[in-house]
Length: 281
Image (cartoon, rainbow, N blue to C red; front, side, top):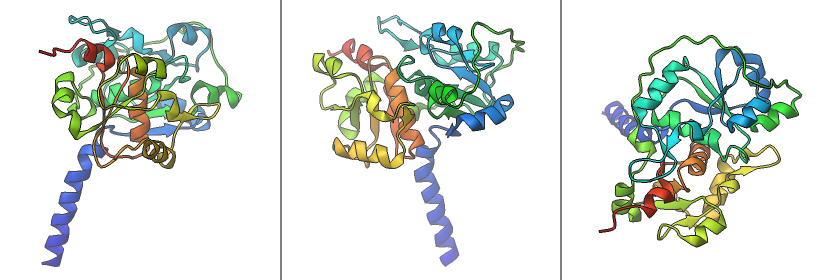
C-alpha cells in the first residue's frame, strides 16, 4: 500500500512540475571556454544587429537578430514575431531542424536582450535540441582572448525540415491577459520613461537591464533573481507575465527566469504595442 501511495504521489508531482520545467526544454548556460572546445557540436546564432555581426562575430556564427523575423502585423502591431510555420520554414532553409543543438549569444545592450528573445522563441516553437545561452555574451568571448571574424562567411547549407510544436504555456495573448490579469503578476521590463508614459494597470516595474549583472552582462542566477523579484513584491506562487514594447526585452527576462529555475512565467510577446491597440469595447 505504501509503495502504491508513493508512486501516486510521484506521478502527481511530475504532473505539477512538468508544465513549468517543460516550458523551456533543454535550456542552459554555456561558458566561452566550453563553447570553444565544443563549437563543432552546435549551430551558433548571433542575436546582435546584423551590422554588429558583420563587424566581428564568433567564427561560424549565423546572424539571427530579432528584427529580421518580426514585422508589423495586420492590426498595426509592430515587432510581431513571424507565425510558427513561417519561422519553421526560415529555420529549415538555414539548415536548422528542431533537434539541432544551438548556442545563442548577444551583448545585451546592442541586441536589446535579443539572445534571450531567441531562446524564448525556440522554446515557443518546441525546440527539442539543446539550447545554450553564452554566459557573458560576446564580451566573455572577447575577454577570453578568443578570435572573431569580420564579414560574411561562406557556408554550405543543406535544407532540412523544422517540425515545430508550439508551446502555448510560453506565451500569453492580449485576450488571455485581459481576462486573467488578476491571476498572475504582470512585470513591465521597459525603461522608466516608457513606464511613465503608459502601462498595463497593476503591473510591477522592473527594468530589463536589472536582469543581468557585471561588465559581461551575465544573467542573474537563481538567488539573485529571487532577491530582485522579492524586493519588488512579486509573489512567485502566482504565474509571472513579462512584457515590454514588443516582446524582445521581456523575452530576455523570461529566459533569465527559466534559467533560474523559478516557477511558471510567460512572455507577452505582443507587449505594449498589442495592449495599446487592444479592443476595449
